Length: 335
Image (tube, rainbow, N blue to C red; front, side, top):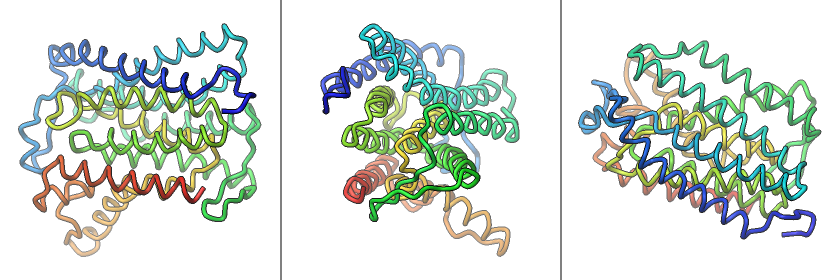
């Protein structure tokens, strides 16, 4: 770490990760029984894989474990930096947190309406999209005008930046935010899949933040990794809790927020290929079915296709995670 990073060292980042991990575990132990008592249980689709029917009633909305963990750790980290006269660094952490928690809260409202208020429709899609859009616009404008990060976008492999016109960059950046959070949301469908894949992607972006000397990214990424890994301890097969839209929208927010802050959204095509393929599988399935009445996959998103092909959930998670790890290593190579 270079001298200008001040208080941010690898030791501090590791400490933040460990604290986040431990807090998430403690919160999981406390919150999961509460969710179970409130009967905030998973509702399985009748047309889904038959093996999932036994998951009916498993506590969901577990993404609040990640949200509360990140708020608590961020509060402590913010106070630590301000106490040590690192106000600028402390303030740079806030936009990423606000976008992440904002996305998570929209998911929470959707989950709350479905599972607590028993409103099967949940938050209407147009309102959900509007909420995500408003938060995305605020974040992108703040990066450009507030932090003066400009509209440069890094081109992997060529290892150069291109300056996009602002009227192209703003809709492009908003698309990245919305597309990423939707892709991660579609990846959430098997015990531990979304949290495993997302934690690897976030780790990759955090490592880039360390290598490039962007302390706010390495600090924020460290607390996110710890929180997700702590949640994962309860989310691995057989899952004791599901994240719901609360968690999946939040994780999409973390990934896209870090990528845009680092100016490497195009790298997501490589390191987040699994969520990209999950999204494409749904789009292709719907388009092909409407045109021909037949299906390309046994079921979409893609992970369900492999389930119905005879793969166990744990095999899907291990293979998808391994592929993501390899892609992230490639991503680190091409930047």
